Length: 143
Image 1 (cartoon, rainbow, N blue to C red):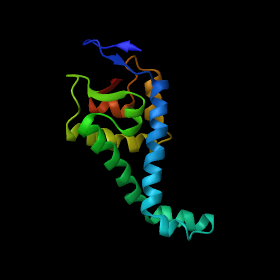
Image 2 (cartoon, one colour):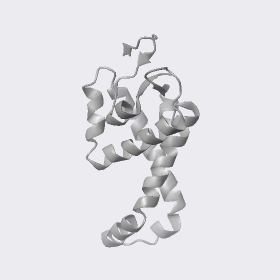
Image 3 (cartoon, rainbow, N blue to C red):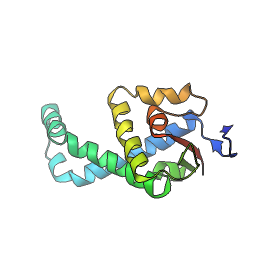
Image 4 (cartoon, one colour):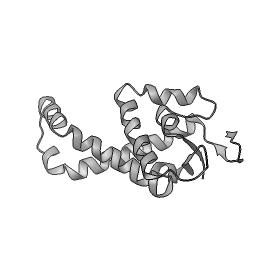
């Protein structure tokens, strides 16, 4: 881990992978819970693809809402909470305001859509910032 100017420990990119997995499982559980009646009746890959196409924007909206709400409220999604890390503004060390949390969540979805390329940045950045961290002015630190 690396220290920022105010002595907060920067979380490594490898450690962030665990939080990413937990958060993806939580969002997947939410989507499955919401759409269970529809999902349980799907029988082949064509029906699954049609379902995903028809509900694409709803599923993306759930992802954005989850990440925005929790980062805005306390700087932590469930994954970050369990692994004791939080998102803060790089400039002040404070929890991101709604606008930054929303921008970060939307850019996160864009990074996911393009083969997670924005996430790979964290492995080569001294502050372990992903594309969505960098463009929203955030960094992930130890909680």
